[in-house]
Length: 424
Image (cartoon, rainbow, N blue to C red):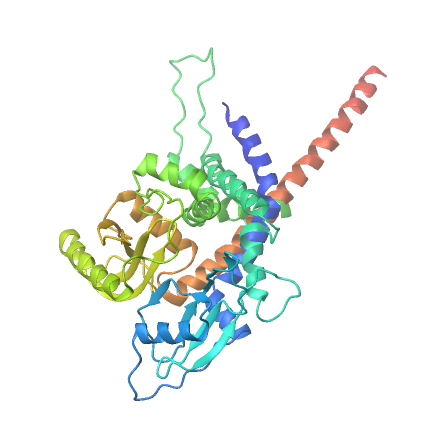
């Protein structure tokens, strides 16, 4: 496999993914600010902060449940914030008369955390047309990871694009390396080879842009140097994109095989005819969760900073307890979680974002980098710029291909003319 072979692979892989990467890059530069933009387009209810005490999670959940008796809330939000509404997500119960789910006019309820009064109710819909202030960011997000195509076709397509992109990251890096020059056969070995610059000094031009060069040279340098300067980010975004779109099919098996990364939820068997609601009472489940997490924090040597949520995963028959710990990378939110049996309360597994396993730590880093969840606003701005650079790399790559194709076409047309001239 010669260098020319890898040039061809890079060329046609790049042409295949170019259009998709332009879309991914431009939409990605927008959704870095997804929470802020969503709140601007569709503002949440205003909660007036006051001196009254906040209601506890159980009271708020019960009041939300009472407002929609035919709905089921299989989660418990534990991080109640003074200036934000309490949010409950509902799914329909089964109608015992028909054994079919009830028709609900609401899927999200927002309550005042001080009084439990209803502030807003919404019915979630995957429809993106007609475009409104409510769903415009949903459209941008779906364009980003599946081109807003219906069904799972777009997810699979973008997953394949991400996989090709991941492999091409290594090929493109290799092609920036300086070409090694070997002594020609038949050359007198006694003749000393001229001293050549070091490998690093010969690689240095690949990192630079010659702005005084021709349009082709500037585009070539932008394509090569631009890819090198943000190569780590490109690889992190590409591989984590495989995780988003082809997690079960490719990402998890590879991470498990190479880094022995555990998959706590995926490794649990899916239950047949699993009960929709846990056998254990929610208050008992929270006491159990806190006890088990305290045991794990002593065993694993981490500190719990705050509780986030307790949910029931009916298909697995387990409770999912999420906390923020000192092992978390994200600026906000929580990534430390534990699973335990919803019937017996038996500990199942725990997942720490960092320090528990090399694969889990790598996973946390690349996903946090992809979603700009670390290092605050400056890194969000940087990732937004990376999205624009990804689009630029696609445009310059197509431009380079078109220029070379035109040059090859012109050269092939001149050869017959030269041959005719020699015959004449």
